[in-house]
Image (cartoon, rainbow, N blue to C red; front, side, top):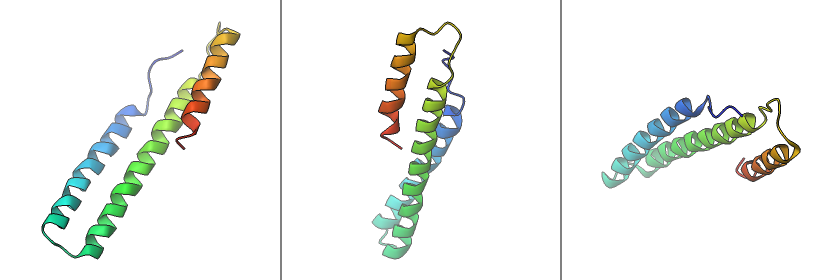
Length: 90
């Protein structure tokens, strides 16, 4: 099976951006900025992380589905179990 998850670099970039944004939200709260603005920005962080999670799980499932010639039935069963385990995070 191909070991490269093609979307991981983009997902890491998205999470780093969300992390930076979260630090700004923390600063807003510490600076006693308006709660509604901080909550709005915090919601944007939550959405960004949720999107990254969906992309991460979908990428892994896609990676698992990349069936290679010569896979045994046992390999295929293991792959199905991996997909089931990851699907609960969608």
